Image (cartoon, rainbow, N blue to C red; front, side, top):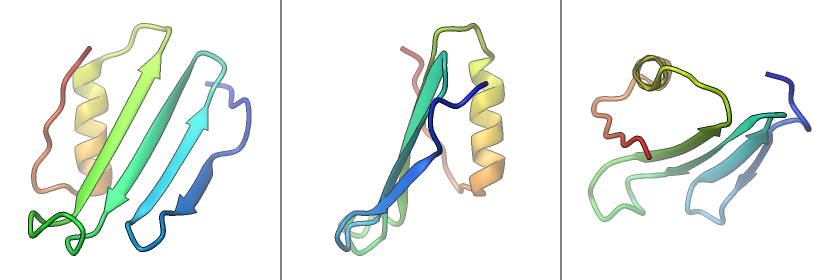
Length: 78
């Protein structure tokens, strides 16, 4: 994947962090929320990934779970 620009990350005013990267044929957004913001639900991380090329959703979910060392992961393919 060839990036169109470097990844961008920013703090979201005590609400967590956000970021994104845009490649030639795909991209991803990521947002984090600390437990203090989620109303006691624990830390939360959301990721939206999109692509114009075929890929294995199951491999992407497995990679994400391992990389971020999540306790629980919920995903949906659209």
